[in-house]
Length: 124
Ligand SMILES: [Zn+2]
Image 1 (cartoon, helix red, strand yellow):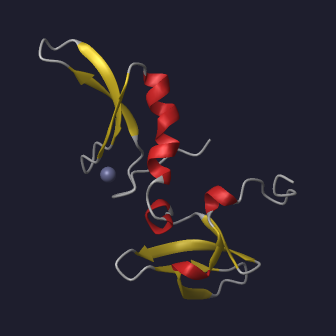
Image 2 (image 1 turned 120 degrees about the horizontal axis):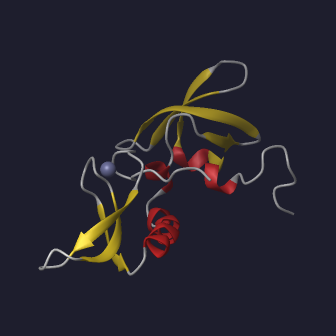
Image 3 (image 1 turned 120 degrees about the vertical axis):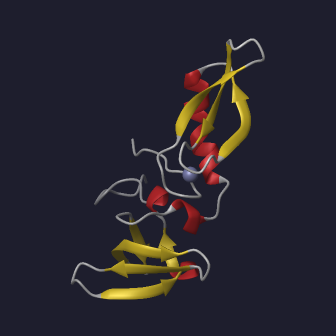
């Protein structure tokens, strides 16, 4: 399974142990050590916290969830993301011929999490 990345800065998300006023472990929360992004949901177990990360990240717009190196489908062509501009909503991508393009996010046919199987039957 791919490590989920912080939607703000791209650092892998972690299950972070919380402490109550006595300093005793209480709950787990999904968060980022780099930019201090943190979920508002606390969980009684680390496992539940990790299982909730998918849902947490899915709340963010696609361009915040895609990172350089990810493969997306542009029309019918798979292209690899080289960079992204979240302010403009644009992605720089490279195709299998090595051509680079800057494309707007709304032309993306499928995002990495919608491309379940490589060369498979797309889950049908
Ligand atoms: Zn972060």
